[in-house]
Length: 478
Image (cartoon, rainbow, N blue to C red):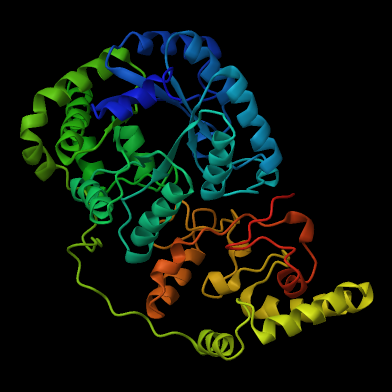
């Protein structure tokens, strides 16, 4: 299937590879982007290029058009496909177009919330659902290779653990390999690899290597773009380096090369090099990284830019779970007393009642008002008609600004929401309740995207009549 795909062939060979990031920014002309593609294609050790799509939530060039230009110039594209501006129908059409164009490497991500024109944001799918869609198309004959994102550079337990849980969900949905987000911490690179190894997950992972300028360090120290983080100490170091005669060029290239060496030593599948489009600099980083590979452990000791109170899975002391609240306990007890997930007498009775209600629109409207009156104040219900509260520790996924249903995005910052920083990420609550209930493994269950046409209808009726989408019952549709 992958005979004509250099990226897939390289991954399958087990040989360490190098991918570069091509930022299709609106600040760069299309002509210049294509020149960059040609120069990068001339670097023999570069296997492919990641073609960004609205990186950081900013507008840019059409990634499909850019990917076509890269391919025509001999540079294998790995195109970023986000869920930001298209619903599932539009995303499928884009994938069909990519298949026709012979572009089959797809980086499936939820995407950053747009900086401008937020009303245009769609988020009909999340990254796990997107992977599942692409995998379905692959089963039908489209030879897609699917990569996904993961950020090990999370320094609170809920943020960190949920990144890994969600990565497991992505692999289970059909992802072929992962690319880390940006960070400067060898212990976290090692943590991710160990997490997967301990669970027997033999999927390739490519580590992010960023050539960090002073300006980029200043921006990332403020948490921009989402998911990128630079510590105050590293910012100070980069600022000092920028005072050199070469403005820090040699130091930042050396740091990038040392990171490549660390990734080699840890057993990563490759390095994803960003922060520069300069072919000579990339060539130097690759060569220097190979030279430093025998000294990777010494390089790792220098790559330790993390917060003082950082969480590490294998090293941090275990924290006791927070106690479950009264509402959670009451609902859990009720679920055990009146089980309806299997074919019990309660389910049969409620199914019959739901049929009766569904045949009477006025009664159904009254029941919808009752449901809303109960669930809005308790859970912030958005009346989606596809309720999965029982699968999310009684936290409504529709209260996430991106409407993600399978775990947090990579933009969380110490438990705070990427879109509304003053608000806690909803997935912190999901994780903490699941931990307290000893149900963390349940968080690995895939929650399919909702049937949008059910919005404003009675989710109780939809559930018992199997009209909705929920774990174990994915229902395609708008």
